[in-house]
Length: 334
Image 1 (cartoon, rainbow, N blue to C red):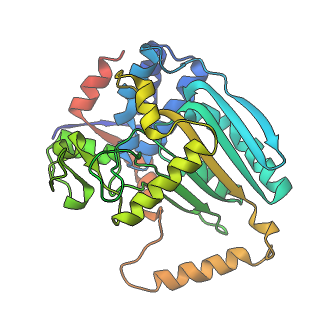
Image 2 (tube, rainbow, N blue to C red):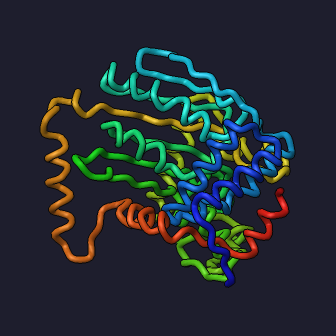
């Protein structure tokens, strides 16, 4: 497969030009481009420029607000709410970050209910930034119905990713971001695009048949990781990022799309914790490091996000590579 090499700055400029041409204003385009290139910089291709056509089509169709002005309010002592004004999540997340940090430091724990927005990005940027501010955090969001419930064959749940971040002393934080499904949707789409097979555990065909063909899974249903365990976590995220905060369930988001094929509209729940207020203000970092040292003593282990951080260092000098076909698609957006 032929690839096109770009510097991170060139990739960002390309994303900005496409978003502005599609109807985004400078502020919304900047936030979305920042998020996509952050993913590309970590070689998380399924959430990088691969998503750009989806962003642009959503604005061009009028479904997403490319000139959104998210609004922040405090619903309760430890509850912050952000109305995304029908825009993309990155701008609202940027605006909500400091109010959430302040709320967590005031109360020891705080939650952010993010509603009326389109979430296309990875979950790790939110929790990584909170960890860099010294907070432990969780993040949850739903999507379109792609995942079958345990024992079923028809999709009901989203892939429903969740993120977790833990601060570290004088080091980049421990961060993970994983779907409740066996594979992320974007990974299956990329496998279909590139002609690769996928594990049998990733999904099933329309009639429940076992398959390793990503195209068949895209027509059928994805499966939760670990069978019933992943399906239960997908159910939990539907409730936390949908029912709890008054936002769409995954199948309601698909109904709202009405066949337009745009990104999922819905909500996100973020929970931030100030570890210094949980009884061990001076020792929690050391105790975390004690656990990490025990893990790393075993050959073949690594901590979550270490590979991403290594990729981040490499792409600063090496740049990024995107498939020629994607590059050509992006050029048509200008």
